[in-house]
Length: 492
Image (cartoon, rainbow, N blue to C red; front, side, top):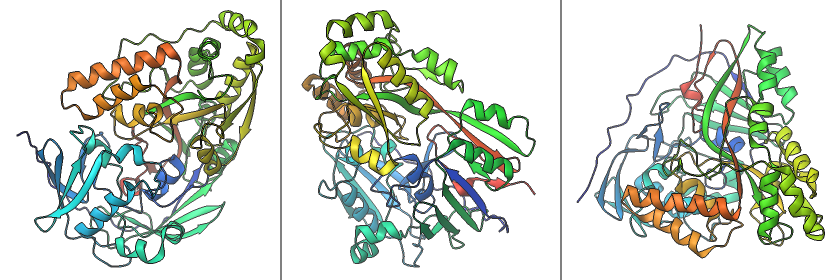
């Protein structure tokens, strides 16, 4: 039987407390602070500092211990994790194996309705074994399980059951390096340092995450010194900041794939020829190099070189607006059907507007609808008849495995998917459960080829991330876009 053991948890490092607080400008307000309810960046940036996960990744992308100190694959369908016995939640109660089991069963309960369910629904059971160990059972082999567990936060069973999901979201209690202090809706979330944290202490007494949808305002805040770190800046802003010695620009390629989502159930994109025309209308290279210019790489598959399951054999999409016009002009009634393009401020609106113009230039009738992030997420997860015709997304699973990006966006059983293809479902399921790497790679290559040939969804590029930071702040951007406060520091 194949098994493996992880190294013990990283050594505890106590960092001297600093008087300085930290202010971070986000592109939007968190849609949820309950870690089992959302996976969008503005939520994740905040709640990941409040909660610990079963395992995590270091800045080099390696899976390392967190609440689980070691793990062993005891059979093809069972993973046993040893749980730390020295962790307390922010209310002072001990984190126990019971809390781990509760957290796993909560996020995998279909009735709970977690948007992350598709990434954990291979887990069929969780139970305590041998005192401080928890065994996870999967529905068949699941080679991506450990990579997915880097996202599974541990919540306190007693508190969640006592107060309910709504109250827990409003005032979350975790075991992480920072504790929840206040949520001024529409304005900011404040976290306080957890001085009793079992691991590496945070260097800031307080961190304030502000919702600042306007990118120019975020940049202005940084230059004025009223923000220490700002997210989601573009290459133009980066060039503007380059001349200011008090600030700096930080960047990294990510595992996030930007894509144009098409509603395959509503006109005009329920027609394959209309989907093909849309693909021909989009100049991916022009967007990545001419508009973005931060190191983005054009993609024609729902994975990137950062993922297991990426294929080098998928042909890039062809940019040919004349061919697109030939298709739409042959089907004017269909092409001119009014289509809503859903988006949110967290996305680069230059890209959204460019896509609208490219599509309308070849004969489509596209209207942009900008909403706040929670509303946007509700739209793109709604039933096909209520969903928008188009949406812009940038998907990341933080797992570096194609299962975490292709399955939720393409499998018919996922709330995020607008695709219903039995062959595609079978391939995604094969890739999800096979323990043979080549079998998985072959299945994903076929998935990517089918999506490319049928234009079910239009992958665009592997995203790069740009941050603006105060010159004395040390922060290392990572491919999984984590923002761990206790991995930052301030130069003295």
